[in-house]
Image: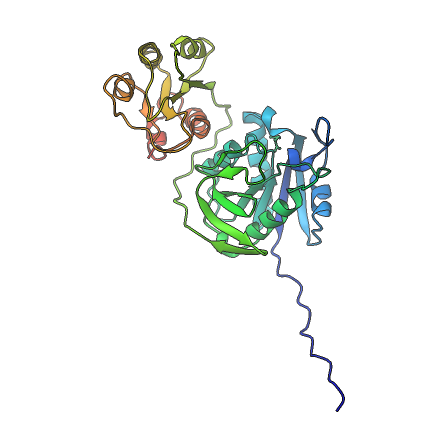
Length: 330
Ligand code: ASP
């Protein structure tokens, strides 16, 4: 009996809603291994490297290291993401350096109300380095951004197969491919996006044209006094985040400097230099005294994300950002 060839199902093109890539640089866009790496590749090149053949619109905001970014870069990034969404993208992927990705992700999350996915990604190894991780991260981020199930999750950060909520995500390793930790919302397994949890969404902050005022992070440490906190206020800071010790403590002179800053109208947030856990006014001469002096505990937030929140809240409400902050400091 003649052998019948197996019936082949018709080839289906992948269902790919229009996703927009906003490129900003970082290691994912860098070459130069094994010497000094430099960001040099644009978004189109990143897509070609990753073998992405789907139609993806690209905006190159810049091709820079994220360690040099500031408010102006966040504003331009926000404008590019908003323009892509206004033009009808179903999702947006942002390629970004890992060093300040947690700040840009949270900043965008605070400013965007749109339910469509906005997903940041990057790389720990350059494209010309053995074990380069950029293309895999980019492909996973595109899968996440194209997935309708991801809508309403806010801004996300996709790295090494894990997808984190913007709030709370932090770079935890300088070298490893699994560079980030935080609250995992999805995992990308063999190109499939699998939900793990539902992030809590909070109200967006108003975007204002004015730059935020100066906001500094000052760290407490063994033997620290209040000199750096006073210097920050002297340099014009209208907001200071104290990266305090442990559950939110500091030495007496730091507490005195907090009191002086608050008396000058400076908003002081109380965060911890410890990687995980909340701050709490637990010790009479530590956290309780800091709160007494006017510092506002951030709950569970890194000093870097607290600074982002405080800057954007002060830009919107320079005189008294407390009402805006309250919705986020829990
Ligand atoms: N190490 C960084 C990166 O991953 C450099 C930067 O933040 O741009 O891209």
